[in-house]
Amino acid sequence: MKSKSFITVFLLFFTIPFFAQVYTDKIVGEKNQQLKDSLKEVVYPYALPIWGQKVAQKGYNLPYSAGLSVNYFWSDSEITIKNLEVGFNNGPLYNLDEIVRFNKSSVEAGAITIRPDIWLLPFLNVYGIFGKSKPTTKINAGIWIPDANNDWSEIASFSTKANFDATTVGIGLTPTIGIGGGWLALDMNMSWSDVSALNKPAFSYVFGPRLGKTFKLRKPERNIAAWVGGFRIHINGDTQGNIALSDVLNLDNAQQKVDNGLTKVSENQTKVDTWWNGLTPAQQNNPANIAKHNTADRALQSAGNFLTTLDGALSTAGSSTIQYSLQKAPKDMWNFIVGTQFQYNKHMMFRLETGFLGTRTQVLCGIQYRFGL
Image (cartoon, rainbow, N blue to C red):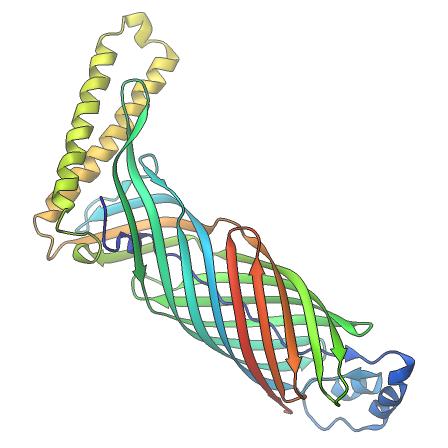
């Protein structure tokens, strides 16, 4: 059952990582003693962060308290899908978990985001998330049914790719601590992505621990930072939606695919019934045979009901709709990240980060401007 954009039924998530790009560094070492002493004498001129004056006098080099960054983020993440239910024209939903098998399926997303932030405390950055993205969903799956020997075979398959537009808003915070010229950041954020094909925005939660060190360059205020860390994503897996059938199926060959599928279901049902009726009463009472018979009956009935309902919906394809419900999740919640940032001065920073290992790959690049508040 090859479809034009059947993937809409399985529309998944995308998420965008954010965390503070500058940190409160403690000035250490004999060669920096003069800078450390000068910080003790300077009056901190800004209202934020709270306790900024006291922290600066203890030898910490504070970044400007407010910032605005623009980032481009790309990711490709494999996904898993379960508890799939599909219905047509607001009729009953059919659970297809037993008969639908997914091969490699993934979500690819490219996004432009704006992130305003403030240092509320010397060790706590708070930020907002505003983004526009174009997620692409790619699905490879098939419908499978058993025969009398409990051998399963594929009666229909589909491989599809669809593009969507999404808007994301969210909030986050990053507790940090300076460690001997380096820093530890524990970023966490929540975001909601509004996609037209979904009944409600998709929620995601990201946790990203990072351990880094800043290397000073010859010119004042200029440095390069490098870090390693992890990236963990959790999403609200419950997804429901309602879409037009004409946006989902390739109507040129859908009817033929349905007819062939119904024929194969009928043939296998006959084989199962013949096998079962040929058993002796003792064999029919065998728990193994009962389980095999019930599994085959249940799967064939599920496939038959689904294809029959789809057959009816195709007769009015121009006005028919599909309703769906599913649970989705990233195949791997964690992956490894490395990143670097070049600080031209305390106002301007340029950042690059990449994530890999596991089944998710991601790249982020951005520019940030900071100012006192």
